Image 1 (tube, rainbow, N blue to C red):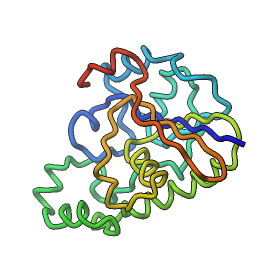
Image 2: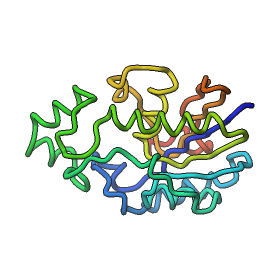
Image 3: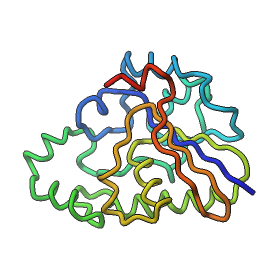
Image 4: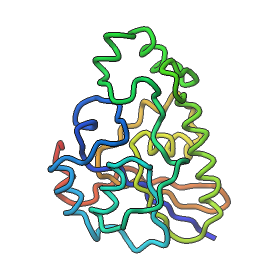
Length: 198
């Protein structure tokens, strides 16, 4: 039995355009919506569509003509606690030591939310379940979920999380059986995205 999961990062929104901790309620901007609609129909037919619970992931799934998708708390973005909705500059100015600790230690959660390590473990549990599901799944998920997928599939240390860049509206595919995954990284969903800086 071979399982295939394609993880699609959301199209551009103001939180992605500027370094800001998304609050989960921010919509796609006009450019992001245009790019997502242009990519509709690019993904192969799928048996299951799931997504992070955020507005931008739901809107991306709908613009790609995948429907609203099934929201999954297991695939939610990293919970950044009290930093939610703030820019990285705001947090760095107010709590520079906490930001430094958070970026250096994947087990830390100075914001009162979830650590990077815990996110990687949560996403890994979801992947373990996906390995038992035959067929194709599309998951429209936050960029940090894609990073956690890469860390899990490569059996990399959680510290590698920050070394993975996930551009908007790209597909990262995994396929495998018995929990052993092969990885295909960051394919743009349409030709325009390949040369576009957002």
